Every structure is written in C-alpha cells, then in structure tokens.
Length: 103
Length: 121
Length: 405
Image 1: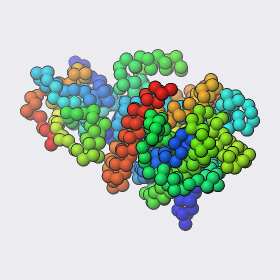
Image 2: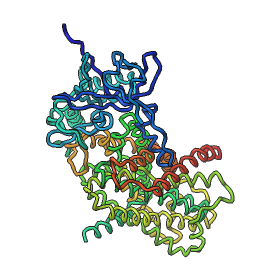
Image 3: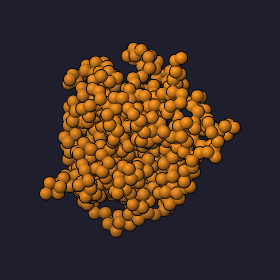
Image 4: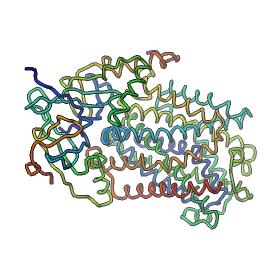
C-alpha cells in the first residue's frame, strides 16, 4: 500500500491559528523548530504563542524599548501533537493540558 | 534550528558563495507516524505572492508566463539534501548558473541589459 | 593614519553630499517666510539624521548585513514588501525632484526649458551608474558638491544679525501663519531625514568593507560630516532671509524665484554659483537615490549587487536603476512643477519615516545582529521622538496647508 505523503508550505504555517480538540483557538504558530535526524532535517516542535505575528514583528522588543515588556504566554507543541491534515486549520491531537507551556 | 528565524528569508549562496536569491518558501513532507521532513527550498515571485494572499499567485504566474513564457509547472525547488551549511547565509551545493534566478537574470541580460552598450558580459 | 584620512574624506564628502533639492528648497522657503525662526527645525532634523546614519554604519560594520537585508530576514517577506513598496514610491518622487533640480539648473544656464533636460539628465546619471564604480561616484559627486559652500560664503558676507540667527536655533512658536509654519517644519524634517541617506550609508559601509574597527571612524564621519553639512542648509536659510525675507518676499512658489538667492550678496556670480550648486548637488543626490533603489531591490530579493560589478553580472540590479531613472524623469517631462514636486516628496518622506525607521530601530536593538553594540536609550529616544514628531505634525499640518491653498 502506497504511503500517503502530504506536502506543506512552512511559510504559510506562520501565524496560523491552532485549534484544540473542541475547535477553540489556543494561539498562533510563532516558530517551527527542527533537528537533524539521520540524514534528514525533521520538525520537532511548534512554538505557539498568543501573539504570533506580533512576535515576528518584535512588538515585545518594541515595548521593551520603552520599558514595557509583556508577559509571554504560549505552548510548545510536539510534532505528534499537531494534526496538519487540513493545513489551513491545524488542530491539536491531544488535550491542552498535555501541552508543555512556555514561561 | 528555528526554521522561521534561521532559515526562511535567508540569503542563499552557491558553492562558491555567490548570491542565489533568498529562501522564499520551505516545503515540508508529512508521512503518517513520522516527524515532518524538511524537503525543499522554494524560490520565486509566486511563492512570495502566496504569502501575501493566495489570489495573487495566479496573477503573478500569468505575468511570468506572458513575459518569458515560464511554463506554469511551479517555482524552482532545491532539495534540502543540497544544503551544506546554515549560518549567516544558507549554502547549497549548486552552481548559481543552474538556478532559476540565474535563468531570470539571463533573460534580463538578453532582453534589456545586453542590448545596451557595455551590457554584454 | 589611514583612518584619519578616511575620516577626513568621509566628513568632506558628507558636507558636499548633504545639500540636495529638498534641503535647499525647504530652507529657502523657511528663510523667506519666517527669517531665522526655523533654524531649529534644520538642527533637529540633522540631529536625528546623525543618530540614524551612525546607527546605519554601526549596523553594517558589526552585523555585516545591510539594513534592507536584515529587514527581510528578521521580519519576513510580507512586511518587507510593504516597506519596500512604500519607501520605493517615495524614493521615486524624491528622485524625480532631484532630476527636476538638475534640469532647472540647466535651464538657468542655457535658457532651454527644463522639460527638455529631464531625460538627458536621467541619461547622464544612468551612464555614471552603468560605467562607474562606487568609490568614484560616492567621492566624486560629493567632492564636487563642495561648491555648495558658496552658500556659507554668501551667508557670512550678508552680515546677518548673528544673535538673531543663534536665537533661531531654539524652537519657538510662530506669531502668525501657524499652519504654514508647521507645514514648513514637516517639510524641513522630511528633507533632513531622508531614509535613502542612511540606507545608502549602510550599503556604502558594506561596499567599503567596514568592520568593527571602523566604529570610531563611523561616529566621527556621521557626527561631524552631517553637522557641517547642516551648516550649508542653515546658510541657505540665512541667505534666503536676507535676499527674500528682508525684501518683503515671503512666499516662494517657484525655482525661478529661488535662482536669485545669491544675487543680492554675490552679484552676477551669485546667479552662476547657485545654478552650479543646484545642478551638482541634485545630480549627486540622484546618483545616490538611483543606487539606493537598486540596492534595496537586490538586497531584498537576494540578487547579486554591487556598484563595482559590471552590469552583466548583476542584471537585476542594473535593470532596476535603469527603469527607476526613466520613470523619475517623467515627472519633469510631463511638466510637474519642480518646486511642488520637491515639497510634496519631502512631506511624503516625513509621513513615511516610521515605515523605514521603526524596523531599523528594532534591528538596532536586536543582539543577534549587533551584539553588544546595540542601541543605548538615548539613541532610541532621540530617533523615536523626532520620527513620531514628524509623523504627527505631518498628519496635522498637511490637511491644514491644503485647506489654506
């Protein structure tokens, strides 16, 4: 049986809202981390934050310029905890409580 | 490695450190039960356009087809296996002369730059 | 010893390269309308520029990136494209104004209408970019630009009341014509803080292969060079106050009026010196802006770039400045009044400053690019203040000025 391979564009995942199992948004993809495994480079986790796009635009840093650094909320989502069957609507495969949080 | 911060939009250079455009997109392959694999680097105006808004892509491809008859077979992809180093720039084991960017600049040389005195290589 | 020479050369080229059509036109209008009252605006704009230029040099020397490169890498292609389109459009207008300036200078000298000169001027600029090297262009144009020092000579010979001139260095509120006053402030700030200046400076630092050992040189060149350059703009204002303001001519509407700037103090020589100054200063600026537009395109999209390369080696880069020069010349060819084009582009620059300066400031505070050389609070504060001021003033005063007609 031929294995199904899905092709995805990483640059479009940036800023996408992640939904939990009930369909509630938990944040946006801020960063995608990868590590070499064998001869391949494989995605290990997604960093999900409450203000993903703003993070890219360094709003936190901007606020820091004026002395107002905000709190950083968010999660570390392992590659096997995210269902990318529908790339436009990434969904968690696990419960939110199972996610590792970012300080 | 942070793919967004350290790879996407970085400068691509060939094996002799000559500039080859930027990394406009990254293709990732998902196989059931395995971590997603970074498969290829993508470059091109269509890739950039898609990041802005999906509808722009057809527009850009149509203009490209009109201008230099680029067959709409998709933008150039560089297999990730060709990446040698990820640092300030991303180095790939290729010659810039084989890249699509070079083909586009070659088109410019023929149609515009080369027609002006002093523009021939 | 080599560094001292480089500092000296850098300062001299900064003086020669400082004045261009925007700083000249706005300074003259300010001098005619408000005598010495608006000198502070030139000084404030220059102060901000000094900080920005020093930052641009520091950024290039330490991170080995140009600012444009870094904006794309750090903020992504979408944000970069927005900044790119915005700044490039403004640049095209400013370039159009500079070409208009050279064309007008030629009209003064030959009597042939400036509309006929626009394309030949654009061609001359193009030819230098096509054939020249970076060093030749940067140094040649700026050294020739030292002719603008005739304005300083004129200002001194005018024997203005120096105490009143000094008083103008302190910000003051206008007694009348408030809308016009603040509009002039906006246009002066836009003229002093042209983004192309600091983008170009960072590209130049890369072309000249600066590294961390150049940080002191960088500070000297940016500080002293821009300061002395500003003196030329202040001189233009002082001469205008004497030649126009003191004689009751408060509203300057055309370059024909401005062309008589140095006549009352330098006689017939003043006419020719003005024409030469205008032509050379604007020509130099046109070279820089043309290059800057091409740099921005090439750096943002990762093409080969470098003024020392032959056009065949960086076809995209060469194509961009070719097209840009042609398009910019069209403004004058179709007959848009050069002074209006100038003032409009300066004001638009002031409005669009946040677009280029804010990302740049964020980069200057990002350790992954500048390491330990990141900005101190003073640099951040000064630049943020002036840019915010320009933007807000522009928002307020543009509608008022339009309403006043």
